[in-house]
Length: 509
Image (cartoon, rainbow, N blue to C red; front, side):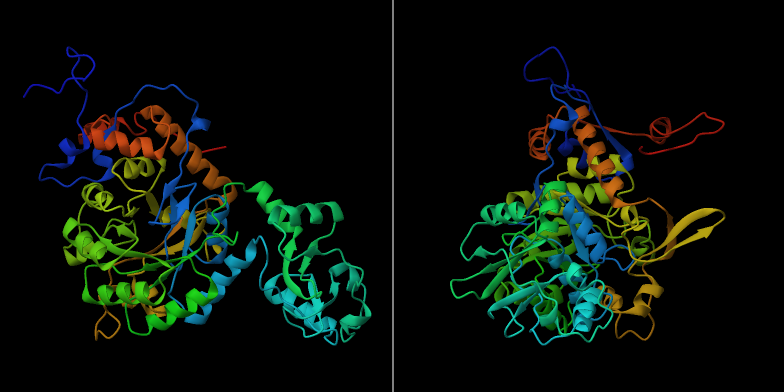
């Protein structure tokens, strides 16, 4: 067969093959089975933009989503994912109350106008102030006549007002600051921030014409806005957060509680999303909570995606058995090689305006690039994030290596703990068949260093392709100018570290 020719130079054949040519055969490919050919560089890596829509309405500055696993995402992971421009999905292998508490921690972490601050009446004691600080981390409390938002503002209690008061039964009326700087109701966030900056106070109460408290602004949030300019935030200027649910009837109650807690994205967590159970849940959420974005899945085939899109999902999660701790393909003999699944589902979903998440098989920066080069709008990461400081669990040592536990939600350990068995339709089964394992991953340090490494690496990858944005990447995939090359086992070995007696690998500094 004659090789394809470049449109601008008839005598120069195109290298490699297009996405359609690579994935049109009968073989199924993983991310290791191909490589992306370089393009022409005309820009610096720092000029690459990574903005992406992860649902029909939610746009992020970073195409990274943390997996809803009990060894990956709780509030600390979700907070830091959002601060750096990504999104965290809090797992549901816990009680409804526990999951909602994690969501609230994220929503309270950074605010524009704090519309539900903790308040106390003047008769409250310092012990009650201590309790709020211990439980929620807030040391400053507005004092109103009713002890609630909407009451007349009487004063404010900060740490400096009571730090050296030994008797914690002292009422706050005796120590509170009464001469306050306030902002008027109706002022913009920028105006309120200027008042707070000029006053050099830690908190700024917002009051109406009757002197009643309607909101609060924190100096700490100003610093966060400065330090994390690309943080993922909603219209209320609070961090975005997602949460997973299953498809049992009681999960409808869980959804309602999550919405009340402020969740932005609900992920229906199922190993096989093409089911009547998921259909019922998607339609229920869209009818009952229309403002919440719903992510359906998991899927690996266009036929599955077609149904979920028809039911009304706002995004799709792609992957079945491709995670490092997942044994679904081995045990169930059902699934699909991940790169092939991502390419075909994304190609179909893009025609309908539905973003897709590549979930599974992401073990390094290169595979992030390959997943998005197949059309994914974002990558969902589990093992990549499990060893970080912000992941749940404690570090331990084995053979001198610092580790953290990481387990599949289909493992017996996870299914025995909480609701994880629902994901595999195994809750009422007499015998539970594991579709995952428990293991450990090496310490990766804090997300404060790890996420910038991943995003910088991805930017350099796009630079090597000659593409300045994710949108440019997907456009090049669609028109065939993004070129791929299939790799033999020998090529894969050559592209990895080889022929060394000893090697020390350090991913970033």
